[in-house]
Image 1 (cartoon, rainbow, N blue to C red):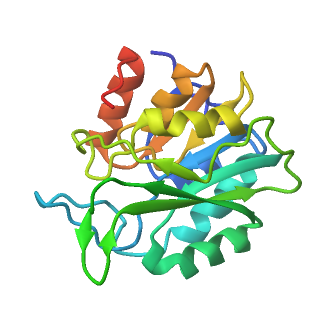
Image 2: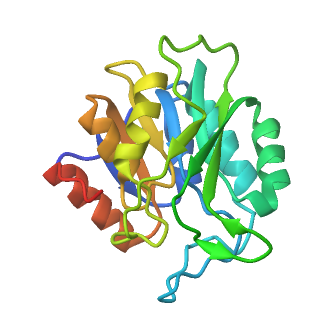
Image 3: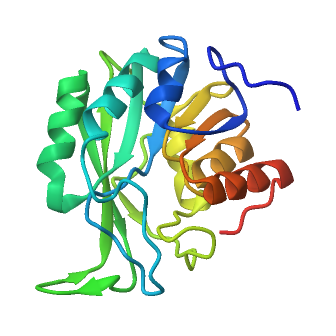
Length: 221
């Protein structure tokens, strides 16, 4: 395997701290960011799995500042977030320089948990770096959730669900970055659409899973 080019990585899944990895990347080197970072909610799945760095927000501002730097001017980023600490995410995005331009709701057919309400959705904000052109075919801001069974990651997203967003916000030939790539769903979706991809994952097991998914070109959901 050839060594990773940290200045201009393409079609790579890199194991490590995303802030440190992005600091080694060239400025304005990616065309779209789609990421599902820890929600800062101390998540624990029914079988006891947890997410690294989900117990603190220390990484929030450094990570989004680094994302802003490596994203090309006039480009977009879409980030899932923890709604219980939405103020912390919004503050980090704005401190980095991002402008909020949209909000996407992923509608579930089931309740992931029940407390005061039945929690039947997840959500993400669409962020712009500078003046971004409108897409030719704007996707809906309500997307039907595709359940993966969380077979590969405790909060696994479906690649099929992410593909329309990548198609709308990243031109063919562009590079999609996911600094919290988990099991690699964003990367699989980008590859299936013919886009370049760069993933960063701190957890060694999930990094291995993401590498296997993109190398075999087989999506589990």
